[in-house]
Image 1 (cartoon, one colour):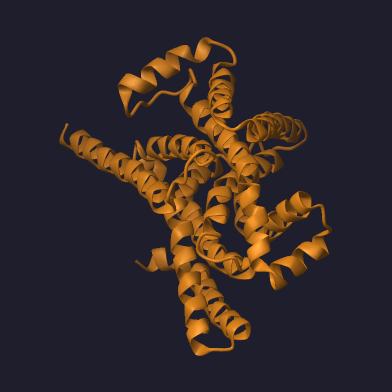
Image 2 (tube, rainbow, N blue to C red):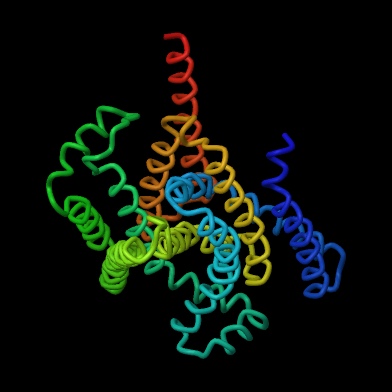
Amino acid sequence: MKQTFTYLRWPFLFTVTGLVLAYWLGYKTTGTVGGALSFFMIGAVLAILEISLSFDNAIVNANILERMEPKWQHRFLTWGILIAVFGMRIVFPLAVVAIAAKIGPISAVLLAATDPHEYARIMDESHIGIAAFGGTFLMMVALTYFIDQSKEVDWIKMIERHLRKWASIRGLEIALVLFTALMFSISLPAHESAAFLFAAVCGLVTFLAVELLGHFLDAEKEVHSAATKGGLGAFLYLEVLDASFSFDGVIGAFALTQNLFLIAIGLGIGAFYVRSMTIMLVERQMLTQFRYLEHGAFYSVLVLSIIMYAQSLWHVPELFTGLIGASFICMSLFSSIRYNKLEQGA
């Protein structure tokens, strides 16, 4: 219990600080105690939403972090949290609005502060491209994990065995993603179809570029250093992956509030917990102890990517998205515990 608290010490501290800031922001915005309490509650709900949507994020991150050097693990927790909180929760929404409205970054900040409804409207109009980009990137992450000849452990064998056998077909995962994106783009109105397909291709190119850059950087590091793996390339890959997971939470947060700064506080609290859970999974080697846990996480990622695509056509409640991801992880955890008991009995 004491060890667990050590991992959650900073998230608890940021939770208290963040909720106090949310209360203060509510009072400054509305001038009433009721308004301040409303901001306080919304901040807490946003934090819970982010945590519930990000269990799979923590497990997938841990799968990569296990192969990284301790100093890069530490940098992911320190530098990475700054990128996650300030980059994805503040800079990203501002950049989307600045590009969509063709205004400067300062004007975007002023718009968020003075006219949150217009700001939310612009973000909502940009949802098609964001969903296509993030969905494509996450789908590639999941399929790359399953379509892999070197993968040795299968959870849902009737699916994973076939995917592993088909790994000899070069570019299969890319073909599957492009086919899925094409089918969804055909289902959209003409004025949205091109934007969806362009964003999906950008997501695919980004995934391939980050993978290529990661291999290049880590190969250079291996040549020039005694440290063999898990350097800058893996760090960059993790940050892009983390950003893709954040798209869903950032967009969903606008359903609860149009206040950018309250969104940053609430989702930022959740981001701290995700980082700490990731480090705990790595240091306590929980992925090794629970054989199928990462399988459940990657199934959750695959479903999340499809849901992000589906959000271009229909509204999918964030609660449903969170429950689907949590269900896969819980089932894989149960299967892992059952496997461990059978092994001990044998």
